[in-house]
Length: 259
Length: 335
Image 1 (tube, helix red, strand yellow):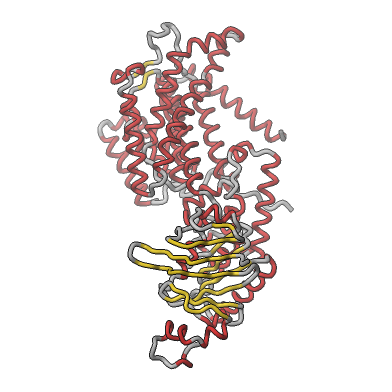
Image 2 (cartoon, rainbow over the protein chains, first blue to last red):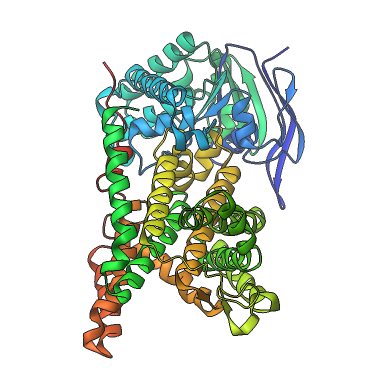
């Protein structure tokens, strides 16, 4: 059975159907891309998987366990982490505190924070060491004490990934991680995603606009248009799919223009 | 405990002893003002947890303070003599009096915290302006409810020197109690927010959606902040009742709430030191400016306007002064 199983998922906002009858299954350890034009429902699908929205109809199952409609923090506890399309860091906190908040914030110590015994101290130390290790892994070590909103754009994107990894996810959802990057940065990001997947044993779903970005990275590409899945195959096949070309370029364009 | 730990404790003890005996040497007018400053500090520090650190804008703090004041005063009036007798049976009278005061403070804090919980659970589903209005309303509801309870004086106000137990005076005129409680409140709140787990409060302030996605139960975090905050507001109210000796619901109207919000905003949202500093300066200022006659309120208002223009982030922004700055900065990595 697939690790992430989205079945017949529909999300409506009033009269608008953002996602319609979406089926998506992702095997454990897979790296799947979700692409589509603007407004296709990609981010809405992410928001349902992470609990920001409840599904209007349909199911979201993670390792066989229904998570559709659960609260985001409960879904996080199931091992789902994400990044956001428009970066959502804790802007006023340092890079280190962004990661520490994710490591320690979910299991607050409450009154033990006030009394601060020996066990508390070792937990804090371990948390900080772990946070620094994660920052180093994403080459953010030198920026650990800088305020998150003072970091350059690329580092902010990486910090969001570091923060997501701090929750020790099994499934990582990356919402347009390559947005606003130049080709060299995109290449570096591709390598980073592949490496994180290997090192942390992650299952990854990532959103992008562009088939060419995910071409050599993902084994499978699902294409959404107007809330419906129009293709789901290996990248090379998706690239030639007439329905995909139509969604991106319009019905009358030549088939060869895509890609 | 380490040697510096003992030294700090000894310094704390000496300071408390000095404050305890200060009223003997000082003009009673100064003692009253110093007590009010200490109480304002507790109220400001407790509101800073909700408004400054958790980013929820509450403007009904005086309601919880009033509830703490009335609950503790009622405890002292109706049960105080009995508790004092029980303590006095085993201990010398002076010591028994000293040991009595934590009781009404705890009663005031716990009753306010219970009310805080009742208000927080529905109100914290709201955001921004809506939350502010809900807390303002809650504060006024509490005040008007108290105003209609006859056994705590109703519109006449409530005096600790009641005729229920004539001859028992439960006023507390030591500054040591007020400032000892202030130090405990500040230390507790600072340790709560400046800990790894306490980052949850600031994470909620910075971005609720992101905090939720990282497994932080934001509603629970907000309710906890509100609970601790209203507990210490209740303690501040209890201190107020026992140092003034007479309370009236007029002291806990929304004007007082706004005063506490002013301390927090002017000091810097997200800085305990700032809240403490602003509470002290703004409580003392009207008294120090008394020589100016009717001009003093104009000067006070001008001071506030000028600060908000020149330093919109408040006096300290999100910085902390010593000794709180040592908690705010994470320990350097142990090598």
